[in-house]
Image (cartoon, rainbow, N blue to C red; front, side, top):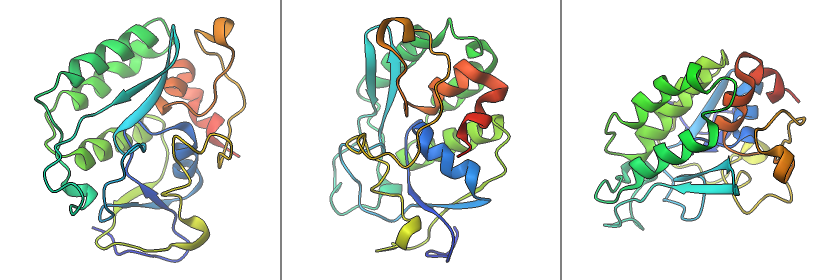
Length: 209
């Protein structure tokens, strides 16, 4: 693990299929820290993502085991596979994006990670984020912290990238083609899946400020 609190290094929370603004950070710095030692944050992107389905924005949420959840570091939180979330998420993503231009090109690699059976949420999130960053050819080293950081200053994005922070995003990409935009208009800052499946090799260009 990386040491914590490096000056000039952004600090993010772990996230499941993170939003576009999260990947803007990865595209803007050569090294980013991900907090592995914070307490688990409910109703955050730690275990949920937003996709664009035929009915509009759809939330996909990974259930987690609640034993000692309040006293456990986020890196110790286990995924609850007793609930049928994995099948539901796969079907939802396929239904939403199978007609997008680059779905077939990227889906198999992403799906393999989803079905790998990661025990812990943090490990699944890191595997997915690193894989997608590599597919987008982002030259960013993503490192977990080895201790909790109370305040990382202006580069602390842990609470700033949040489902409830829609009114004050840290980054909004220029509009790009979305399958359902004719019905509901362009929707910004969805999961990185939305940008990747629609723009493919050009997706990284949309992450630049």
